[in-house]
View (cartoon, one colour):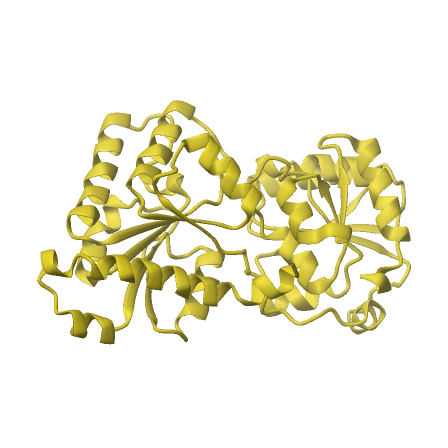
Length: 361
């Protein structure tokens, strides 16, 4: 089936999920002493946590146009327990959680027992007050690991308390259910649609002319939070092996000053021009992408989902990245896959992607 159609229908799919959960809520009206007619007429209120992620912001903006009232609470520095009272004041019908690792305090010095008890207390309150818990399964485990046993307990506690789990792909759902044995929970496939609002790509030559960029340059771009687990050092070293002075590597996303300096020192050593674009709005990202030859990534081989294939799919920009079932499911021939960590394989795919007739895409 056409992935673009699925992406465009993601909001409708989410509303369908919410309505299914609403039907489950209706069955409990007699226990809650809520008038059926009164409930049906009001909007479904959904609290999203954490609420500051770009993906969550995009999802809430789209859902506000439907019969759902959305509330975003908490940022990436706060725990579920720290926003618990705010959630209670909202009296939501559904709490939609993302990234279980963000629900508790993180770091090697946390009191594991206290953190897990606080998490269980919050989730138990939702269950006791018939507030349905929905979890979106972005990962099997956190990207940044510090205490695997503790982080697994956080994931399992959240999963076992959830009424419904949303997956972005069939393969991701199968892997997740197999890992956590959560067959009793209701599972939904709602395709990722973060970039579905962008327009199709304009002419690259025109975009470069507008930005005073040479047509002869080969511009590679990576997008997302800039973190060590994304292996940008590999990309810098591998691209520099092309020994092309016209090559540029654009890095889009938030980065800490210390890590930025590390990458700059490596790029200087490798004699590769890298440009940090910072975090861009959706409009800025679209405009920037028009001048790019290829999107490149060095992570994702073992991830359940990623926004990067959807950026390629929407703007019709080929992507060079490690093979993943999810990426292949989204991109098909727009993806050029290499063996993770293998510079020779990466450069071969770069050559193939640059030489491909992009009008066919």
